[in-house]
Length: 323
Image (cartoon, rainbow, N blue to C red; front, side):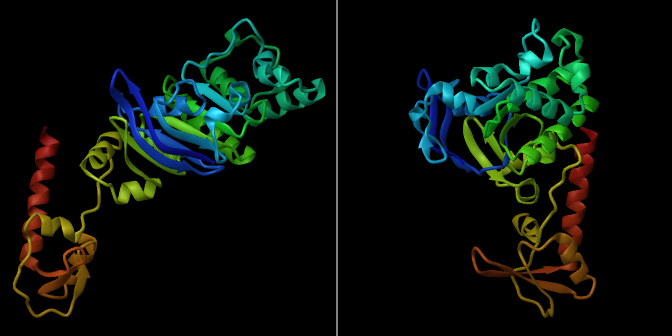
């Protein structure tokens, strides 16, 4: 659906997005996340040419975005901002219908669309359609911002930290509304956030960025269970206070808790087996043989090795709690 091919964005010889290559699938809820300055909002804005790329290609359904008429491109891409950007001197209905009117929809079709969209976010059309924006709460205004982005039935919705200014209860409610809308109308959503919990809750896939580069792309489960590097793991630990990567046998090997000499054993595991699986095996056997696929080497881990490793983990955890 949306494909980035070696995309760069450069300001004064500094790359703010560098060698960005990935594909966002049709109908996918795709989340861009990273710390401040990671290039996620710049990446988002290049899709609808609010920011021009410096090098590479972005294609929508195989066609370079540079080949689209700019107005037609943006009509087919809804956009939701943190600042909402509704017109305060206009009614809710007038805000929703800006693009449909530009596209010269019939009055009957526009009326049906207003009713459908307001009902989809649990706002009574007769009660809300003629209200001024200034009469709405922050959560109601953001709901109108979301449905306005959907009004002309675009294929793609871009959302740039749309809920970060809202209170937690309103934010959670809107997250669920957006998921329901995305599923109902089968839209491709590209969503920027700095909140890892929000990314996990919403994303079909997540792209974690740092200094303009991709660190890891995958489902929440992929990233949580198999962080690609130290940066990803640290970001998870910071963004998800209760996150803790499950230790595997390789962690023991890396820390030096193993024996090179083979010992009599009837149990065999791999270096990626969870520590809890090793513990179960060592409750039955004095030692366990470990195969390590990358270097084809075989290690032996004893009960004593496991006890010393767990003791080290406990000491490190206690030290972390005291900081």
